[in-house]
Length: 258
Image (cartoon, rainbow, N blue to C red; front, side):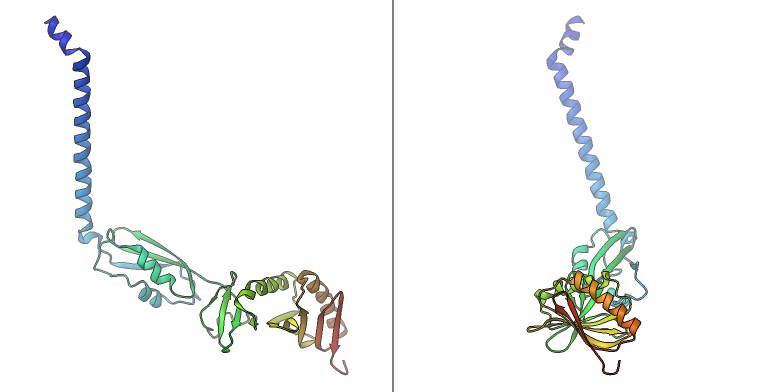
C-alpha cells in the first residue's frame, strides 16, 4: 500500500495528472467555442434577425437631403439579409458619395433595425465658377452641391477666386464677421488680378464697392472701416465707393449732394 502511494504521489504522476487536467480543460473550452459558433451560425440564419427596419435618426427639419433620398442611397436590402451578415462599409460609401453629406454613423440595432445618422456640410459662402454656376463652400474650403433656392439665401458670393484662393478668401470673410460689422452686409467678395480683393457691401449709406487691395491686413482694415461706417451713418452720407488699400488712409467717394 505504501509502495502504491509513493508511485501515485511521485513527481511523474503529479505531472501526468496536471497534463491530463489541462487537456480536459482545453477540450471542454474547444467544445464550448464550437457550440457558441454553431449557435451564432444558426442565429444568423434565423428570420428573427433579418433586417426589417431602416431608421433615419437625428434628421434636421431643414436637411438638404430628404429621408427618401437617403433611403435610396443606402440601398439596404430590407427583408433579404440578416443583420449579422449586413456589410456596413458599402452602405457608408454610397451615402457619403452625396455632395451634401460629410459623414455617416451606422448602427445595427438587434434584432431587426439598421440606424443611419447623417452629418451634413454647412455652407459658409457661395462660389461662382467660370460658367456662372454657383456652388456651396464649407468652412474647409470644399466646393460642393448646386444652389438650392431659399436655402442659406444670404451667403456671400466668392467671384474670381480660384480653388487655391478659397481658404484665404474664407479667412477674410471670417475676419469680417469677427469685426462685428452689424450695420453692413457683405454680399460679394471678388478677386481682381489688378486691384486685389473687392467687396460689395450693403449699408445704410448705400450699396458700394470696397477695394481692399492685394497686401491685406484684414483685422486692421476692418477695424478702421467699422469706424468709417459709424461716421457715415451718423452724418447720413451716401457712398459710391471706398478704398481701404491706401495704407493707413481710407478714401471715401460720396454721392453728389450727400
